[in-house]
Image 1: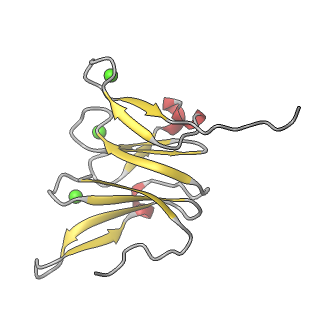
Image 2 (image 1 turned 30 degrees about the horizontal axis):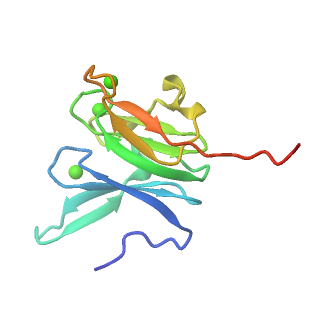
Image 3 (image 1 turned 90 degrees about the vertical axis):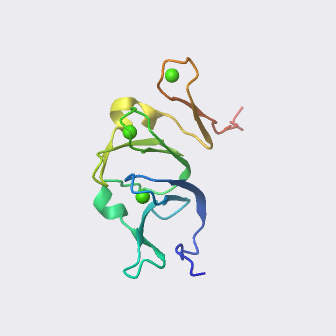
Length: 144
Ligand SMILES: [Ca+2]
Ligand SMILES: [Ca+2]
Ligand SMILES: [Ca+2]
């Protein structure tokens, strides 16, 4: 098996889901130092293998300021396409445009104001829309 993540700088988390509804599972990888990666799965020409292509730069996803912790792929806006939520110093929300590009709604949604480690998405209030639970980082102030 050939490795698709070759950076020695420390990948953090992997989220798997079908972002373009073609039946093949795509992969989103967070990274402590390097930018995140979105890897699109496609069949090889002979249809015998699955090939993963890094499409991050063409998607509108730009987490190049380092440190992203966890990610989840889920349909946040109930349009049938998986969106991407990423935790880090500034958590990020990318809404799927249904054409393998994403719109950055981090600021308009307010999610960028929250630092997060792990993430759980569930419909807490049963209104049909996923809600977000972020586990935070405990910062101890040693100044007295
Ligand atoms: Ca796919
Ligand atoms: Ca969606
Ligand atoms: Ca809800």
